[in-house]
Image (cartoon, rainbow, N blue to C red; front, side, top):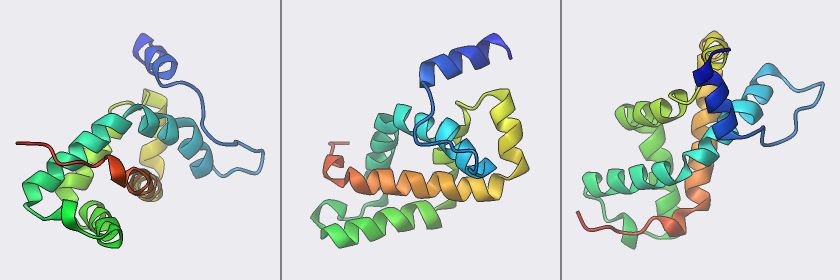
Length: 133
């Protein structure tokens, strides 16, 4: 493991969530890699989503809570460019070994990554406040 990987792991912190003997490889990756990165990058994700709202010219801030939740889902599931930008914010903090593990099962791990991120944004919808452009 090189210096970059050691620094990344120290910077991100340890696993979040239980890792049990019966945990699947995807579950282990989720708790050891994805959750710590999502926690670390939280402020960036919020700022990025606020920028997305502003660029979309939607009236997000006047939406009902239910409609805001749907907007978050649609933004991440349907806007491939935005989703890829979010994935890049996560993948940039992978170690080399984690990246190698990721590419072995990227489809399933992408699904987990985006679902965790959607839930994170939904849980913090009250922090999504309008900023002047």
